[in-house]
Length: 145
Length: 259
Image 1 (cartoon, chains in turn purple, green):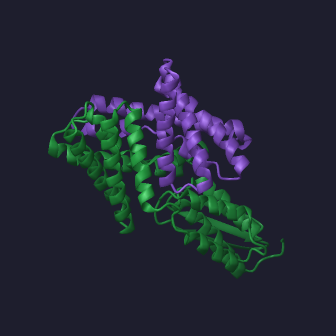
Image 2 (cartoon, rainbow over the protein chains, first blue to last red):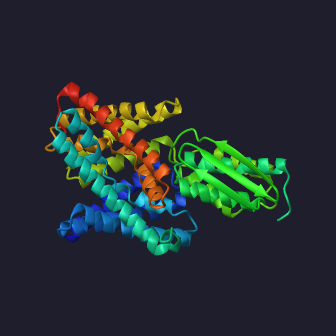
Image 3 (cartoon, rainbow over the protein chains, first blue to last red):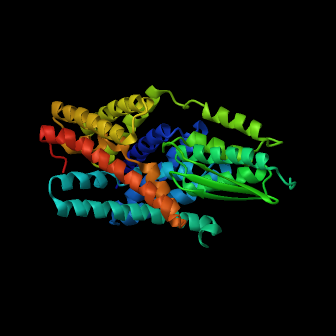
């Protein structure tokens, strides 16, 4: 995993997050920070996976980082958190395994369909755990019920 | 601000607070966020106490002042994503005009509602195309796959704009756009002899993945709002299935295998 590799992935992560930020009508001033936070999450996830971590662990760490940095920046910029946290993890949402499941099932391949379905759910859980942990760490009201 | 409000005043204040909640939900905010904002607005306008029950499909809120209370119900008419509007509503709730009279508040809300999208449509189409092109590379595709995914996604987004403007239900919109993206990216990967054609096709529909409802569903569920989490999650699930259906329509006709 060379430095060039990382730069390339950073550009990809930026393009992916920026594109969705525009689609979501993120306010102009928050576009760049949101995209950069997305890059952070993506690079972290990519690096961990290159070092052998599973997709779920990589996604958890990426989402956690996005949640923490997003919270910090949102507080600084006096903007709602979700502008940065939701946009930042959009590249991790397991869309592909999810609709692959539909296609598998349509071909009567239930086993593979279940496999990609479970994979999608596990990654979704990792995102939830990452964002949730970030929230618990940054806002005490989330740890108490 | 602790004088007792009349029945009519309470009703007017409530109408404002509930409208804020509806606008937030329609812009993609999580239920807990809409709840917090409704309460903040109502309290800032002078009510003593407010209770709200917020789900993606209905808001019920009660405001109290002295011995009076009123309750209203409102239903958001759809779930989209408009982060600028969420930010504007949140900002308004923390920077209320003084005095925060219902008429003035309604005027502010009208202003927010009439804000057009910040980015012109061609820019959105281009950005979405770039994003899907980038995704094609992220999942392992090369330049050809990136290009096919980008053009397919751009076409799908253009169609999506038209259909949403025509107020078509999101589910058929998703099916049609998935079919458009799949068809166009498929034509391109075949025409350009892509080495990994399935990646170009798979990435082209990513613009339709309901990422925001999915994430807000999770956030609501962690906060023990199972009703909101489940219903929004179900909505996201239906949209995901719609993507699959749209893709299948094209794949079945052409015999292409994306697996």
